[in-house]
Length: 375
Ligand SMILES: NC(=O)N[C@@H](CC(=O)O)C(=O)O
Ligand SMILES: [Zn+2]
Ligand SMILES: [Zn+2]
Image (cartoon, rainbow, N blue to C red; front, side, top):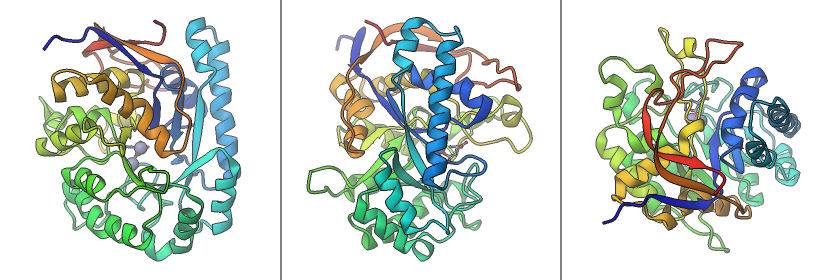
């Protein structure tokens, strides 16, 4: 088989992204805005984004940060042309106090595209989350099902008795299956899946709505497509490979790679790019999250090539740029990004003046693909 040396795909969307707030937001938003046309922006700020008004204000801060980046003179004019069109898709953080009227307001807003479940205690800034989804949120879930607003799920049980590597598989049994049974028409995204059990569940339990769109979908990150849990301990403890849900055994990575390259419409790109300052990762009790945004597309190309030997460009494009948009009922993007087989090396540290900097995921490594946004 001859190796592809270049190809292009429709401009992609990142359907799971952390942009944070304040100075960090200014620092990280360009990496996404210069590659992706839209992104689902996670609401796990401190305090969390729980109302439509807060989501609207946060959306404006994201747009303002993009404008400041363009005016700063630090980015090329051609990058700024692309960044200007970045559209943040906002999400509400589900709590035990979320009310039905807020769901209806979100659905009517035009800029809130989903509601996010953080099981209380499961991950970064999840303290305000929900401990018993079906017990606490029945009327809210019914309202979301009725108005078609998707529920995005961090799918791990928090029962301390459950082994950390089994928390996602247990979540399928204890929460996902009962949720589908009770709300069969609720649109659900199983975020950043990491196990064969989650991939199988989304493959086999996905039903379609009247327009033929999947009602159950999943995002998959570059790290979970490329690595198994050995990476966490390679040559010593590797804090920059630590994210939640944690990397799993090789059989699970292989199942995710099969799902992503299956051509099924319910699997799509969501980087879960989650920046934390260097000193907060490289410490006793370091934070969970990989900052992958600057090189995520290059890494996805590598993952698809590793899975299939040769990238099937149509399937890669569907995963990066079409399946997610269709799930969210958004128009497909125009424009393109270009991939060239040319080595590119990731910076060891991204200097962030206000802090200790951010170590990008796979810092210092050389990737095989280079991405451009101009032909
Ligand atoms: N994935 C992570 O390890 N961390 C995310 C939270 C999340 O998506 O669970 C973060 O906000 O840092
Ligand atoms: Zn999560
Ligand atoms: Zn996340």
